[in-house]
Length: 414
Ligand SMILES: Cc1cc2nc3c(=O)[nH]c(=O)nc-3n(C[C@H](O)[C@H](O)[C@H](O)COP(=O)(O)OP(=O)(O)OC[C@H]3O[C@@H](n4cnc5c(N)ncnc54)[C@H](O)[C@@H]3O)c2cc1C
Image 1: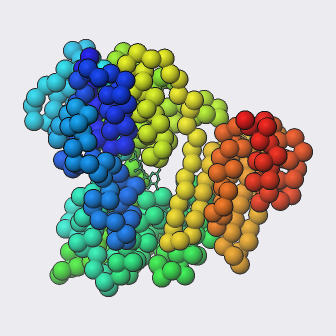
Image 2: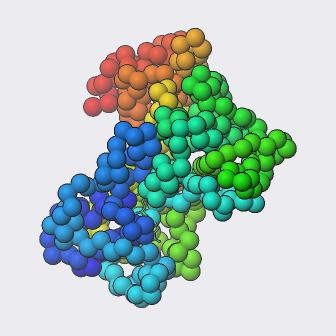
Image 3: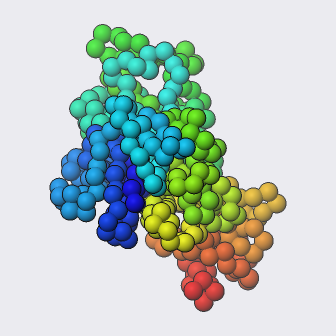
């Protein structure tokens, strides 16, 4: 059996390892489009803050790991997939056949459509190459203008500030992490950033970038201009699927997969950030772009690729964000549902916030700021779809009792 995996991130590498464990004879080829040793993007913030070196980002440290497992890592990009012929065409023109194909190409950063976006000094923050360039460019006192304050925008602030950057963050919507946190929580996180020396500018964005001597001139939509040594464009990501045009593989927000991580084309699977799979609460299809989800989907996909019948229970949207030491979390349907019930508790003085979202007797979503202990209990209550009974009222009057609720529900959750 010849397995080809496109992508050498956490999903691709996990799948290759599981395939080898289950089939000692199979041929396993992983295509790595970046020419790096397989690494974890989620380690990049630690590299930016100097907590780890490049080697700390590697998914597997042992240089012989892949050779020992007879996993062939090909430093080559897939340019097209011919599902009728069962082949992948590489960017260098070679064509490789597959019996089973796993697409694990993750996401690619969205590109701002503004003049000057290709100038030197402009970077995204998605790949190891980006991280190297940022480390080289951000010297103490460097003026950094960052467009975007989503998950990645927030998680990299610590690294930039600890390198001595004078950081200004432009937030188009006016709300930091608006796709993860309710307005009040966003406001608290933005205020916290201010106390840490980061200037947040809401309701504006870059309109144009120009060279100005050795620096950049950033012209905002308000007309104001900012000088910058580095411009960081972190405006979100989209699934890495461009090379699949014409392949017949069904794509919506990502590659649509069933509960066995199969695409609509026989023998073709997808896992990780590139896959749109069902969520565990309602069975709705969504891309859930976090590493634990990528790894779990890859594990299940690999089992199905060798002929086992293993369903994926569905993903739960979870985000755990560290914004310069302020921890925030969101779980499940954090925005709630129409007709649902919600409770919000705000403690401005201590930068603590919690909101819970209920559907009938069940907890379906939660957001927290400043809570670090026991937040996994919120995930347990949501994922367990447990009927809370009298605990619903207790949580509505004091949402911080979620751990007590979890313990009280433990029998139902077991
Ligand atoms: C700065 C940063 C911080 C993050 N922090 C967290 C965090 O704290 N927690 C968390 O859960 N997640 C975090 N994430 C997200 C996490 O990194 C992703 O969810 C995870 O990497 C997804 O794994 P994946 O294997 O699906 O895709 P990726 O890791 O994106 O890997 C995709 C692979 O496919 C390759 N590829 C793409 N196209 C092609 C092609 N055409 N041909 C060949 N190869 C190709 C790429 O080179 C790469 O090797 C963070 C991401 C970033 C950038």
